Length: 84
Image (cartoon, rainbow, N blue to C red):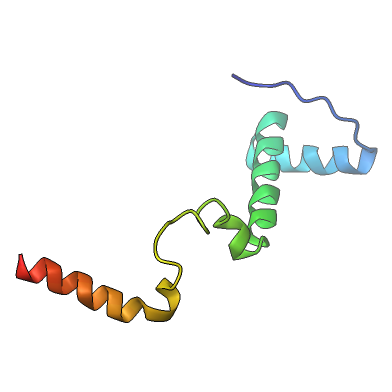
């Protein structure tokens, strides 16, 4: 599905769009798509890493003391696997 976009731009911006069209041999739609993608990627790159992982952080389950004694729990778990 596609959506139609109507926008009002000043003459200077229209000149820039026309220039981009001519230089790249692209349609207005292609210029707008690429511009939005580039801007979107720049904005996403500036997001804090935590925001990108928000859906995963805190989604696990386990012992509340896991961060304090993970080595012992991991050792114990590995011993059980090796002995079976």
